[in-house]
Image (tube, rainbow, N blue to C red; front, side, top):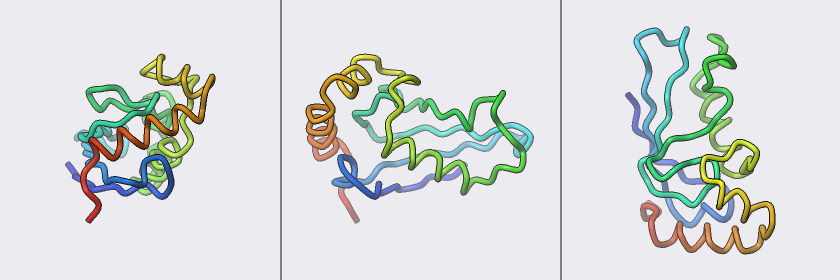
Length: 119
């Protein structure tokens, strides 16, 4: 298991740091690792328990040649580019689609209130 302190590169999440846990199954790299975000976040693809919807980690999509760097890059890309079609939190996904400005403001405020302080 790895524990990572992630600082997203751009708004609305760059105002804080996020604790990410990476669990490697015994069958890794033949089975994908799992990611859990241990810091609350306002994001359509991450639920309140920290479960993450990331296609690269789905069993049918996993390629054993994928590296943990590929996984983390995909996670950061998804974090900065929400995918409302793959949402775990439909109300936030709808807000992102209907009123992106409001979503950005809500996400930034939530980050300032709930994320880890920047090192």
